[in-house]
Amino acid sequence: MSQTDETEIKIKGLCVTFPDKDGVEDIQALKDVNLDIKEGEFVSLLGPSGCGKTTLLRSIADLQEINSGIISVKGRTPKEIRKSQKYGIVFQSPVLYD
Ligand SMILES: Nc1ncnc2c1ncn2[C@@H]1O[C@H](COP(=O)(O)OP(=O)(O)OP(=O)(O)O)[C@@H](O)[C@H]1O
Ligand SMILES: [Mg+2]
Image (cartoon, rainbow, N blue to C red; front, top):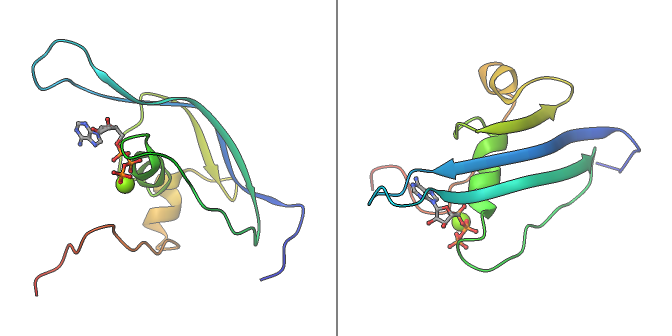
C-alpha cells in the first residue's frame, strides 16, 4: 500500500501501569506515549526488553486495558476496530496448541 498523509493510528498521552506483585510500587509500562502513524506507513518499535513495545501493541489491539490517554484507529476506538474484526496480530510467543 502506498503512503498517504492520512493519519491512521493516533495515540495521545497513553499511560499503562501494572500492579506490582509485591504491592510496593506499580510498574509504569507506558508513560505519556504519543505517536501518529499514517496509512501505509511501515513502523518498527525498537527498544530494550521491558521498555513497553508489547504493551503498546496490545493496547492498540484492545488486548490491554489502559490507564489514561487516547488511542484512535481510523477515527474509531480499538474496541470498535477489534469487534469489527479489522485487526490481524501475530503474537510474540505461540499461543495455540501444537
Ligand atoms: N501482565 C503484566 N503484569 C505485570 N507487569 C507487566 C505485564 N506485562 C508487562 N509488564 C511489565 O511492563 C513492562 C513493559 O513490558 P513489555 O512486555 O511491554 O516490554 P517489551 O518492550 O515488549 O519487552 P520484550 O522486548 O522483552 O518483549 C515491563 O516492566 C514488564 O515487566
Ligand atoms: Mg515484547
